[in-house]
Length: 261
Image 1 (tube, rainbow, N blue to C red):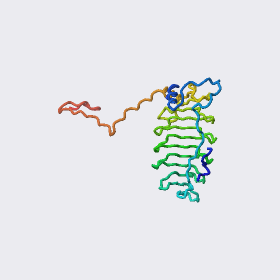
Image 2 (cartoon, rainbow, N blue to C red):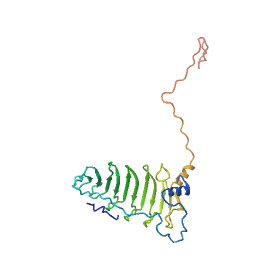
Image 3 (cartoon, rainbow, N blue to C red):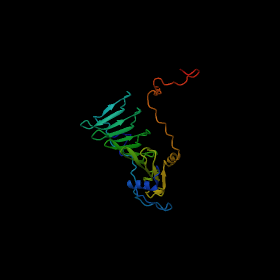
Image 4 (cartoon, one colour):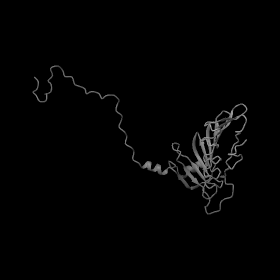
């Protein structure tokens, strides 16, 4: 039995310059060439930038006879439902995280028991806003709906657990018109971004923007920080060495008195 909240099918750069971004884009299957004259009419479909924007829900039979239901807050409504197969292996799980009686998350598992898919509803409208796909327990794709039109518009791609590129349909026409290349492994806020302004399905080189260029320029212009002094060795300071005079040697005059005989 399908959940009524998730019907199925449902409605659901350090600045590297233009050349570096276009190289990244060509690696993800986008042609890195100069777009046509913006004054011309948009090219005919297909452009290669089309995307399926339907938010698809994967079935999870939460009403199955062998489903295991748990009521964490004692209100008589299940907050977690585990759905196993005939052998007892968990296939999927349904979660009400805020105890409001509405489903927030569907989680799906591979034969090894690792999470392979997660559908999350963040705005409590009964439809998924994000679908996270994993392979061997590691995320490789996040599909998101960000503008409340019940259509996917953002695709984030991961490698080795790190966000490496993003594709966006910013105007909801089903065509990718933004390409993001996350070029700084130490800061996932930094990216090179190119846009398609003439609807030909290709990034326009003149639109490339380095989100961290200004911050990098300021950092490069700053004077180097003074180096801290070397740390002193631990322990008490050594006592001064007292010279040992040979027997019978004259001593220095004593202040305020006569020289010793």
